[in-house]
Image 1 (cartoon, rainbow, N blue to C red):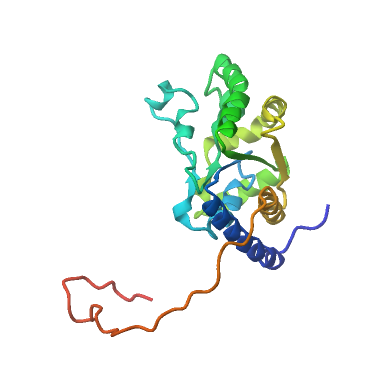
Image 2: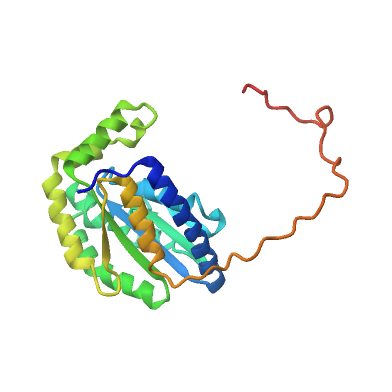
Length: 260
């Protein structure tokens, strides 16, 4: 295994990939595609980091970042897929799921958040549900970010040592370490039962988080025959006037103190 990619080298490549992401978004917008990208993986596998690098380059009007919390009392009585369906993209949009309906494939059964029957029903329903989505014209991509036990513990310790990141840790994260092998069993079953020809799972080795981000973004770009539709530079007109904005002394407003 090669050494981890340096921040400098990673950012150089990332800039080029983000430019390609802009081209891709403009092409998706122009052609009216509906794209849903699922990111799953163990805690601290790097889902948030990849998603952040993708959406930071794009027009937020046309991208939906879906990170749902614990279902409400009402949502618990709905069809399981219902609240995820509500976040699916319209024409010209991309929806990125930071965890998705696959919570029920791994996290929920391990942590006893669902019954054995609910789990069995999900495993039967998920491929059929995804086929319906694709039959409607939706482009569906599913990524699993893999991380070793040693790397996961190292990242948990880094979060724990940093007060600004400690909020990322939860009791579930700590339980995940103790139930590593149990998680592995359900992950393997998920791949076997829900990786289909039309909606396969793409596996991303994530111990080197910078390489994982670049490899994943590169793979996403490779799934589309996109073209550069950004267009030529626009001619910026010269301003007419220029004195019509509020002055420092006029107007019923409170000025923000210039602390810095």
